[in-house]
Amino acid sequence: QVQLVESGGGLVQAGGSLRLSCIGSGRTVSSFSYYAMGWFRQAPGKEREFVAAISRAGGSTDYADSVKGRFTISRDNAKNMMYLQMNSLKPEDTAVYYCAARNTPGVITTPADYEYWGQGTQVTVSS
Image 1 (cartoon, rainbow, N blue to C red):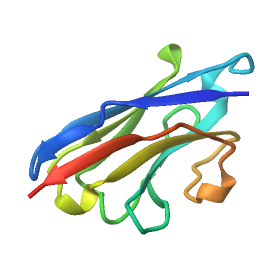
Image 2: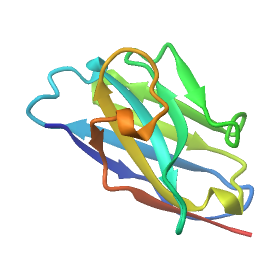
Image 3: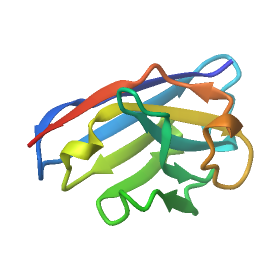
């Protein structure tokens, strides 16, 4: 079992920045680098949507069109950490942000393909 915990959410004005973090832990996390990981978000009344994903070693990434050029996903396997740097935030970025992991190679953009999820962190962007 893998536990994921997000942090770094909050209230920010439009145009501002936030950095989300996700830390992995658990008895089976023998190597954080075995896990492909991603960020997703869910706004009230909407389905969970893909934001960004990163491969095991961080060499490959993918982004939703809505965040390309504004958000950057990264990871530090030595610290069991994944990050999402969010710049030029917009009110439509307001959502609960979740990190997810799966023990697999490649980059995963579909929520159903992930095994483990965090509890989410709220990001609110005011206009």
